Amino acid sequence: MSRTVAEGLDHPECVVWDPKGFLLAGGEAGQLYRIDLSDGSHRIIADTKGWILGIALDGDGNAYLCDPTNRCLFKATPEGELSKLSEGTTELPMTTPNYSVFDAQGNLYVSDSGDWLGATGRIYRISPKGETIIWSHDVPHFANGLALNSSETYLYVVESTLPGITRIPILSDGSAGEAELVVKMPLTVPDGIAFDEIGNLYIGCYRPDRIYKFDITDGLTIIADDFQGTSIGAPTNVAFGGSHLRTLFIASLARWHIGAIEVDVPGQPLNRPAPIAVKE
Image 1 (cartoon, rainbow, N blue to C red):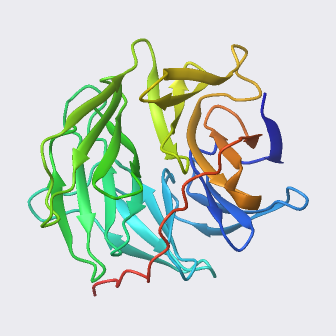
Image 2 (image 1 turned 180 degrees about the vertical axis):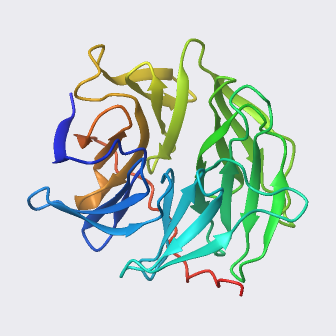
Image 3 (image 1 turned 30 degrees about the horizontal axis):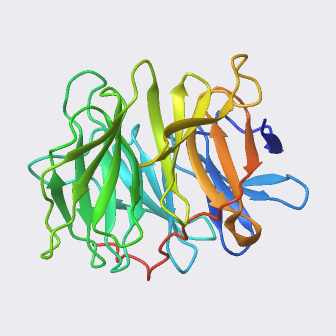
């Protein structure tokens, strides 16, 4: 079962590891927490007055915050200065920005879940210059957590109400190919995903209180399960970090803490590109 690394947070939905040696997590009232792993202490470094879901980091330590209450993606400096990076496009504004991930070129893919049962999920892509496009409509079933495979030939997408994992080919010109089903997960609500370095996909589930590992050979394996929902409670997002990326950090939306479990295979490092320009 997981150990607790920080307590007293406001229902954290997402957690991310900063290579400088700390965690960032978001609260349901818009708090951006910085967590010191040496003692579990934390402080609020920014506040969107909304609700922070997914968090991505660039190479300068700026945090990119999905906020469905404000219907936008914020950029927060390490000092906590906030600016709106994107509200979607003119023809299709963001409604439920949920998670984001950088590719090696510095593009930021952002899931917008849309309506819970409305089949309106989609993926935006924000360029290093801050230009937003609608990249794919091919994941309508509450598009949620995102992860790129190591060769960046596919964007893996959680579709929470499918429920399951879909992947979208990234074509040679950068456009989206046709989405493909990876695995269906009946009687679950998958939420966040992260790859390890050999291609296993770790999946946090809002329901039940469970974390799966998926690989092509063995399929789905349960690696953490808490029917009481106390050690892990609605484990939404997961992130590798710590020494040699061998710790899987867990955000439990239904609780007030960040948990962690140790793994045998290190996590796949995330891209930390140059900052995205904020368009005036």
